[in-house]
Length: 231
Image (cartoon, one colour):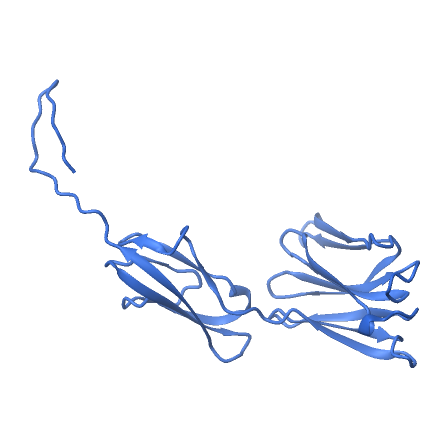
C-alpha cells in the first residue's frame, strides 16, 4: 500500500492533483491517517510506514509529508523514529495541525521508550527568517528605472512596510520603486511574522545616473540627404 492524497475541485469533483508517498527503502505499507491544510492551501499529511527488516529503525516509523497545495508536488517528507530507535518498536502520527506560520504539529503514539505506549508530539518547520529579493540581475540599477521588490517570506508575514531611503515608502507586499538620483540606497523592509516582534531586513541598491544625450535643433532633410549624429 502507498499513502495517497487527492485534491478535488469543490464544484465539479474533478481530481486536480494526486500525490503519492512510497517508502522505496522497504517498499512496504505506507498509511495516511490525518491531513491538515493551512491558509495558503498547502497540505500536511501524517501517517505511518512499516519496515519488513530492521534497517536501523523501528518496525513502524511515523511519517510527516508536506505537499504544495497548488501543484500537488511533494515539498518534504520526514520518517520519524523515536530517539534513533533500533528496536522493533513503532511510532505513528494520528493527528496533524498547521498553525499558519510554517509550524506543523504531528501527534501520535510511540512504544519505543522502553515502556508501554506513550504520547508523541513532534513540531516541524519553524517560521523562516525575513528576507526579500530584487527583480534585477544585480543591485546596480539606473535612475528612473522601476525596480521590483518581492517579500520572500510573504506566507508568514502578517504586515509589512518598505522604506527606500530616498523619501519613498510603500505598504504593498511586492512594490515597484524608481530611484530618481544616483546614490547608494539602503532599502529597509519591516515585517511582523506570525505575531512575533517586528523583524527587519536590509539590502543596498546602487543607482547610476542615466545617460545624457544632447541633440541639436530640429533639421529638415530632403530625400537622399545625409545627416551625421554625434552622441
